[in-house]
Amino acid sequence: MDEVSQVTKIADDAVEPPPEFGGGFDRKFITGLAKKKEVQTWKKK
Image (cartoon, rainbow, N blue to C red; front, top):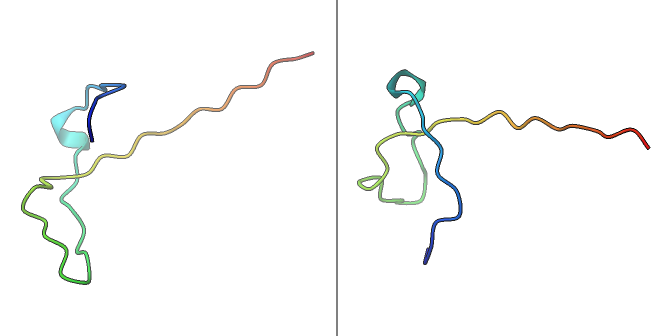
């Protein structure tokens, strides 16, 4: 990654432990995961 396009504040209690990854994936740089709910809006024509 070369640049950041968006930063989101996340409460500490919203961060979950990282899942187990298969295939020898190194988790030492992942401290946790958070989910963001995407809201889709529609405009009337």
